[in-house]
Image (cartoon, rainbow over all chains, first blue to last red; front, side, top):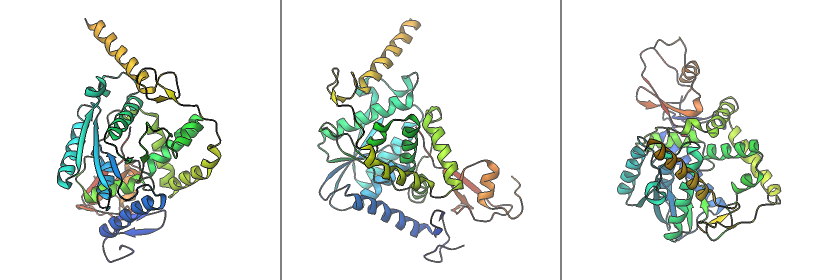
Length: 301
Length: 53
């Protein structure tokens, strides 16, 4: 078996198109497609200051590496230490090493220093707690740095999982938010340059080009998303290209979702950030988590 | 482990109950496609590439 473009041994069989790629031609195809996604959508303009949410995992390292090959943009890597013992230390080590080697500015901010709690101290819902607080910290720091955009490593699989989760939950507001970031001058616009790349391809790109730690977050098994992820991967194995089909179907639906009435944003009385509820999710989660920690402490004393 | 005659990486993954969409596989130290044939004595590394959370 040979690469479709040369005599090299193939490292990837793109089953949804029937093409085989060797190491070099896969790398070339991958980088070209990510840049095409960026250019076609006008995600990044010349001269912009781009923040990159960097965990040190395969998605964010791949994203930062490809953005670093673009001319006329300024990059700032921001990493969040959520406080997950035995997991985050390893990926932060990769992040620090990568930024040092590429001379990209890196800032690490922690849940403990910013909110006084870590993910390990939460009782339930570690994934939603982590996601909500991480988004807030990244947005806050991107605002303070005066960045034009905040790029995240969400890939095609992340996108299709979010689409299916919100279909199943019957949540048109969240479905719409996947393609339209909430309009408020308090939010730095977010971009997802890897959104057209299947996770398998991102993983392969990372294996071929970097020394990445592929450990899975210890809380991942608990999430509803994991069940959806496995379901979609089974569909994809048996019907190559189904992930693109899910995303294209969603994109066709988006214009109809735009007419769905959305809740007006108001200021959270506790922190002043925009919220559609009485109190924003960050304050709500912090209050209940701190109450849980205090209850446990009192019980022990 | 002992492998069947005329097997491939894809068939090995099926036998192990591993979805090919979730892994990158190397044979004898080089990344290979799942259609690659396997022979007794080959070294196969399976890297789980999906992350969660």
